[in-house]
Image 1 (cartoon, rainbow, N blue to C red):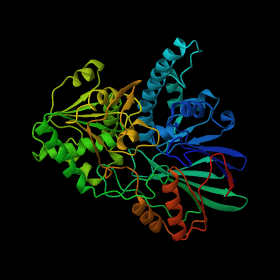
Image 2: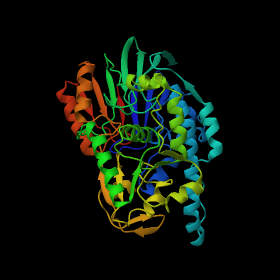
Image 3: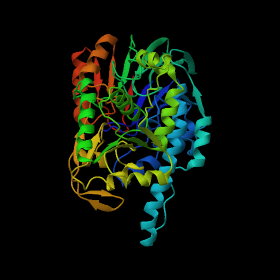
Image 4: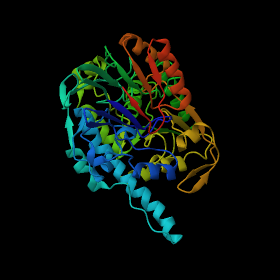
Amino acid sequence: MNLRFLGAVGTTTGSMHLLEVKGKRILLECGLYQGKRKEAFERNRNIPLDCAALDCCILSHAHIDHSGNLPSLLKNGYRGPIMTTPATRDLCEVMLADSAHLQVQDVAYVNRKRLRQGKNPFEPLYAPGDIPPTIRAMRTLPYGKDLQVSPGVTLSYHDAGHILGAAFVQLDIRENGSSKRLFFTGDMGRPHMPILRDPDVLHDVDVLITESTYGNRLHPSREDVKAKLADLCRRITDARSRLLIPAFSVGRTQQIVYFLNELFAEGTIGDLPVFVDSPLSTKATLIYTQHPECFNEDILGMLREGGKPFAFPRLTYVTETEDSKRLNAMPGPVVIISASGMCEGGRILHHLAHTVEDERNVVLIVGYQAENTLGRRIVEHVSPIRIYGDEYPLRAQVEIINALSAHADRNEMRAYFTDMGPKVDQVFVVHGEPDAAGQLATDMRALGALQVTQPELGEVYDV
């Protein structure tokens, strides 16, 4: 069998890997590439394989950099199943619909410029009508169950602890009288985090494909999160200003709400109003409440006692556009949580435009910011920043909390792979910028992996 790496190599977006075994072609994910507009436009439109010839697609979780180009897969002729966990399927239904809306919106903005320049308009990558067929193609498999997805290839999902429904992909493969176990991490979660269970530990792995987002970095203590959130809330209360938090709609938003809920219950933040301004975040939070099979004992205990981890008296979920606009005229103090997490689209852009020029305001970054994104430029204090073609001086304070990352850091990955055991013949390090992937590759060699590779885009390897 062989592996071909078609995305998320040398970078953290566009996850896509092709496994060929016994004449069958299995695609591991079909993520949206995010970055510079022109490069993203070209890469997302040109899936580098014969989609109609694929036999199966396996999805680890719902984040758009892993699932976001599935509608294009079907538009290009794929007719097989898309395997997911039940929670991932439910999240994809709302996340892909939101992505389709953004695709149409983004192309409309670009086309206004192109038409003024006398150029032909672009078509959106996909549209809302492309989402229902994608969801209908999904077949769900709960954690811990086995399913033969191809002759000699058995799939099982195991809890990855990353976001709701996220799974480690285990493929047990029999070929030419021998058997191998392939483990694809998707994105690896972290132990001892709020809301979700710890990642399951797999064993007897022969071939490993692992993400490396934080392969060269360490996260601060989770205990620092509440203290820093409390300090920032006090700061904006004293200044009567705003705290703006760009947050991924799935995972990060629910974590922030959970901590603010605790701070409110403790009386630490008083009557400070908090708004979650994202229709997608609102829908995703509802889906969280429908999948307790993913929750850890802390949340399950709270639910058994009648608690509501994602609601408290001063928290408001905003869905209507006019209500969102009114937030920009609202006097401080106020906390606004909005998407997208990398500031590449959605309502967060409008809030940034009304926030970043005032030095009393705070922009709190709580997630990984990929290269060439607006969020990365904010983290790097680039000024001015460009929003919808207009420039804004970045005068607001920029704060960062890395402890909420849903990705395992270097020490957490080393501990996980140590617990997994030594039987790994081949390791492929993907989904990380070069320095992070390089450090994890070095660590895997030190842990005893026989062959460790950082693949290049398009390369094919025998396994």
